[in-house]
Amino acid sequence: METIAVYWEDRIKTYGFSEVTGLALVQWSASPEALSGLGSGIRDMGESDMGMLLVLGQGLASRPTEFGLLVKQRCEDQTIRRLRNILGEGASENVSSRSPAGLIHFYGPHFGDRYGIADAALRALTDCGVPILAISCSASSIYLALSEAWMGKAREALSKAFLRPER
Image 1 (spheres, rainbow, N blue to C red):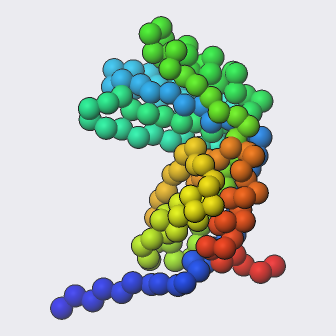
Image 2 (cartoon, one colour):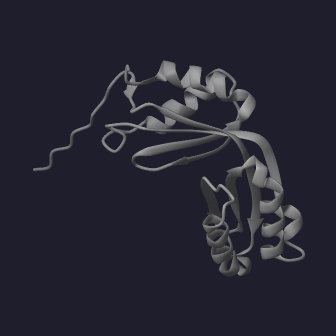
Image 3 (cartoon, rainbow, N blue to C red):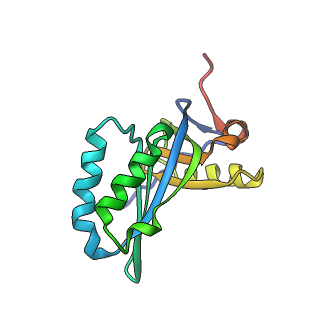
């Protein structure tokens, strides 16, 4: 006999929202051949004072891997130069950037026990017209990269969908 339990709450509980502004989202794509040098290059940037907050990647077998790197806006040009150097000629022209950007990160006590959390976040933002630059989800956390101009509206929309602790 198998027992399956699903935890459900009308407004999903969180431990609150963390927000960071003054960021840039640097994006590029890389072929499988370019990936070997890319990993150590990103690691080296992370060990420097470039203010790297988030690395995103999405791969499909039939296309180059798409990447995003969220860094402090003051490091945007330096990050682009370093990435272009790592990628080399021919691949470096696809490096682009969006700034100013912001990051909203949140997690909650039941994020690993229930389904629909990412859907609730995306629905809350898209229902009020907030464009999402990038999203990363795990069993316990959600990271949303947005244009800095939309941070207030996003916080408001997410506060309606998610319950934050009263302080």
